Length: 206
Image (cartoon, rainbow, N blue to C red):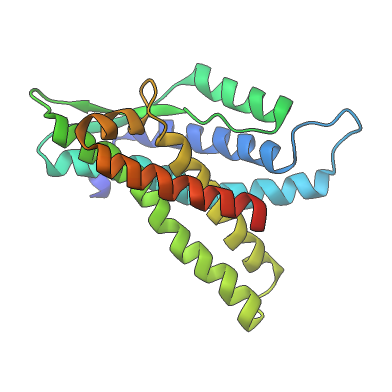
């Protein structure tokens, strides 16, 4: 499967991963304050974001890719430099991540509405599933004394994956939610509800 990820795609994923890690770092730090920033905390958030975004974002896009391949299409992720800059700028200014770093482009004729919907749903579903191991890491850290880094990684991992799932399930523009809604409103309703309930819990209780 690794050989199906082209060199250009690896570079695009790597650049988008770093940019998103920076954006989430700024968001977790509450943006850039006029009173200055705690560089130690920012460095910690960046390490955590590299780990959690690296898992959440990359697997989200690869889920799209390999689901498309399963249907017989070719697919590759392509970064969007302008949107990456926008994501970092908004995170810096207001502490919110608007994450549209690019898209997995699907090549092939006659893509059906169902295929497009399933391919689109695979990304947010992957993020929701990833909340399980991060949740276990959080619980394990609190229960078995695995240390503060394990606890923090689990909490941040849940937050970031919940953000990625909820944002991508919005039914607008090129986001996954619009294609899922066009395919199956019931599946869309379940996924967006679970995503936002999880995001609410992650933001206000972790």
